[in-house]
Length: 449
Ligand SMILES: NC(=O)c1ccc[n+]([C@@H]2O[C@H](COP(=O)([O-])OP(=O)(O)OC[C@H]3O[C@@H](n4cnc5c(N)ncnc54)[C@H](O)[C@@H]3O)[C@@H](O)[C@H]2O)c1
Image 1 (spheres, rainbow, N blue to C red):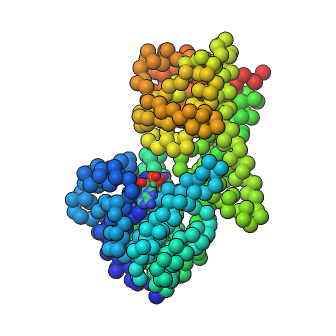
Image 2: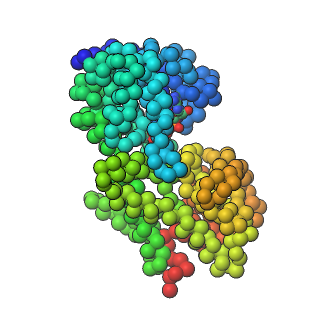
Image 3: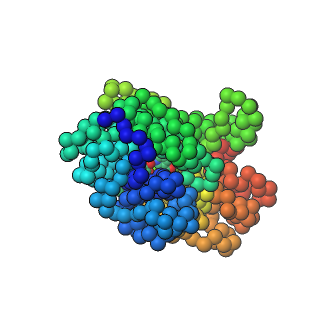
């Protein structure tokens, strides 16, 4: 098979309607394709059928319009894959307790496709994963059950997702962010390229699925390593009496050869703290140890411990022990202005605070419930509810710990009512009144002479 003309792709399916899959499905549906969205979560399917989006980047009016026009068909039924000319896999790729890749979702989706795969279909894996997954995991599942051959009977490719959920980079979305694609054969790549090009963004073809898989990991490891670098310099700055935030602001005035990264309480989300481990796990099969990845992980994972240490020190300087102190964590989403709390450093910080006897509450306008514990740092699993943020709540705390600085909050107001503020993300940069109550990550601290 040489790859059918893209114009033959009239219906496509997207498996996994989360942060990645739903925007992709909506974008293809908006281009005039009939899109079957498959998700095993009945609440998501029901919500979409009622025209309600649960992803901030796709508004409900768009979902309602696409559903009404029959352009987007949400379902939990894999049988509808039979109607699709192309199938995108956008399921989660988490790691297990030992930080080894958990490919169970990709395998389950591939098995579901294999049961219905027919000659002429195009399958594109979008989930972030280690180089080799498309060829070593997905391909055998698709071929074994069906007797069909990739590159001959059906097309198979990998194309990483580069979406950045949230308002930070609103100008970049699936219709204008360049896509990378690698196919099992050049014809597979070409067919995937032509289909993806319908979204409007340039499509860059690389020589293989593993090159495309590695591209995504390079992008995320680049971020992880640079964040670790600036985190390390933040710790040094504290000891040397230098304000790292001032330094970054100055350094980024260089118009070339420098890109600012910012320190913080750790890294979170579905990508930066997870994806590098996929590569370091795979690298070991090649007798290779990815030292930069491990070093970055070591530095970034130590940050929540450092923040809790700073809280304990700051309380100690006021003559109060952390044990028994009332601590309110402000912002538990993994980054500013999003509702995604997966792998948030706030989780470890709250576990450590609870483990050291603090009475912990939190407030996050985007995260109504927050689960912590159930592991080595806090054996019991605890679900916390976002506390209302009133002047009385703030005044009743021994310390406010700002982990994620959502832009909707008024930090001058917070500082005005607080006794002590530990700011791990420079959210209080513009606050002038009450600065003596603020302890900042990466700024002169108790070690400064
Ligand atoms: N969220 C991001 O910013 C982002 C960015 C780039 C890449 N990625 C990658 O994209 C992939 C998906 O991430 P996400 O954030 O969209 O995850 P998500 O958890 O938001 O969505 C995944 C969806 O897949 C569904 N699902 C799980 N197993 C399924 C199955 N067998 N069949 C059908 N549906 C199934 C889940 O119910 C869920 O709705 C991951 O590999 C992730 O690393 C995520």
